[in-house]
Image (cartoon, rainbow, N blue to C red):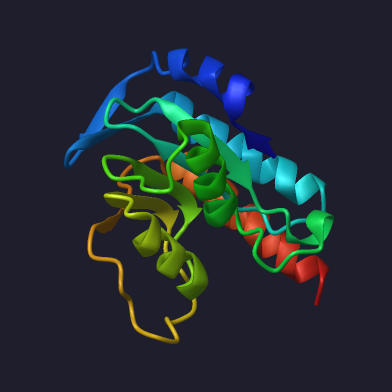
Length: 167
């Protein structure tokens, strides 16, 4: 699931719910709900249920994507990477200084490298990784989102079901 370009520009007006300020950027209930919906959509499409969004400092969604590795036959189509690429195209610049990435799951090694290269300022995630980093944790400005326990339980259940069904 990708929303950007002309469709993405309509997302800029969606952030009207309660805002939570974390560092220099804001997230809100609407963003978290959209991430959960995108993760559920990925699960329905036999994808790992992970979603990510690139937002500006006001919490406006620039891009929102979910995993699409299976659908697109691409090892690169992690939610974080497709959200970054979509935001770069929407903004007309590969440099995402001043923007933040919010993900349902702590980014993997590959996504962390892409996040760093794209110059994203901050990374927020709802669930921590279960596996250690292979090359060390190289993201400085990242943090676990506090609260949203209901949504976190829902996401954890989706991830657990996804992998149980495939083992």
